[in-house]
Image (spheres, one colour):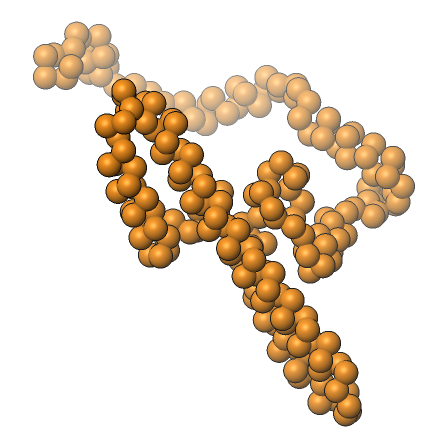
Length: 202
């Protein structure tokens, strides 16, 4: 669910109108649990799904319009240096159009984690390929250069195994540490610690 719609006034008005209708139908159910489970959840989900469907339709229409504008610019006769500023402006609009959705719904999510009806566009596919390419480790140097997937995986496995393995305790270092942080307790504190709790302290 895209929780950003909750902060919008138009969505709140729609939800308030629906909530008023649901309140009037509360007496048709024997208890609040059945009223909420059988009516409220269903109606609120349907309202949200309709809102998301409208937003997706508007988003696709705007995206297609921007791409059509880019094709029109490319088909115009004229020097390329005059086309470049217009193409850059349209490209920036497409990037801004997708920036908010990319922050809310990562492209690498599984199909089950995406909202119903969410379809990747060409922009999303290129963005996903670029992100995967940036995250991929192609080489790793320790003592020697590893370029194969098996060599990189083995090197990382060995590093992590040695990083989190059990460390032997140096007794001499522990004794030296205790000498440095030794805290001498004053004799007057012993009686205070041994005394029972007072009623005001409980």
